[in-house]
Length: 559
Ligand code: SF4
Figure 1 (cartoon, protein in one colour):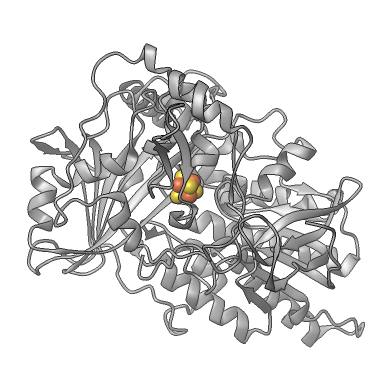
Figure 2: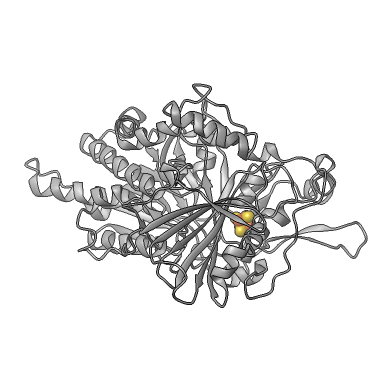
């Protein structure tokens, strides 16, 4: 498309992403600005409306997905009276169970590991919580723009000066349709990237400025989840179940969960490390298999699946956190890998890093100094906070699983006894996609393929239907493939096109080419639930996920 004239908006702060991290940053900033403006003798007013938050979802909260068991620590610091303020946090955890599964049996651990004890935490719907936070941010006078994805970082030299939002009204070939509206350049004194896992702006920013130099490579997991309604009397409201073992094999990182939001409403999911070896492994199929376990199928019997979703998690931990400050910008939350993979929790860390970023931004605005040196105070802040203490204790956790589950449990035990150290001061890590083996190296059968029965088990398309996903059909494909030749020829032979298995939304399909030159890759982009797995797990690293036209994507509700 030829260069178009774009509107430019100037503001003080731009937060990209209205999830727990971005909205905690916005709300804390609103608190600081309010108190400053009430008490300032200098007359220098800092306006809340000059804090912009852009969000690619059409409605705040509908692209957010999590288990979720919330550690309320950060929320209590941000909104101490959150219950009186109507926060949708009303299912305290009443008990924990941890099981080890084999295909036909389960063993309950006599003692729950300390990191899986959830007393004092809450089972929440992250959509509802984030929606509520968005309402608080609007009441505080902040400027929220839903339906706007950030497509490009704006730079001056190596400093960030803002973000370009998505063009709306382009057809599949990238040509303007009658309703075309060019994206806007939002120029900000400080831009805060809070896009969640594998941020589509954070990824090129980290690469361009080498922010991950000297860090461990990032590693990820994919969580696939359904919301179920079941008959009453089977599980207590607030009960939290975690499982290890089947259907994942001993080489794989991950586990299952069942969270009882109420006696009749369950959040059921399986988290699979995206560092598996067999390219035929299908995380969605593994989740369907998980539900056929006798213990779980009995729990779900006669129930109804209500919703579906999938999301990736950054699992690399402390040593994979990139440099979080550059001239004019900060990285927070999942975008910067603030997640405790041992506890399977990141919301509280996303929120706390958002709040600490807000305090840093506030100081920078007062000093009118937006340099990396000033913004680097964010790093000092999180290192002096409980964020550091929590992540330091598990600094080597995920790397301990590099050689499989059993080794991971042994390393985890040693690390627990040595305050997180284990056998080495810093365990190394390998990017997950490098663990994938070629087909020729994969002995034995592929994972058993579940035949969906439409009651307990579902195919990907039925599940996508339950995610509420929709996109404008006539728009450029938002899955950018650098070289289709690799997909259609080399990958077919070497890896068997793992994208058709790892994508939990049936976006990638190898279609028979009637011309006789073999199967070719077809992309059903409108199914995409924005989990980013393809961007992460592709063995050639030639898939880039970029935001589709703003407003498109899943519509998670109660998830
Ligand atoms: Fe996830 Fe990629 Fe599939 Fe979209 S296309 S659902 S981002 S794996």
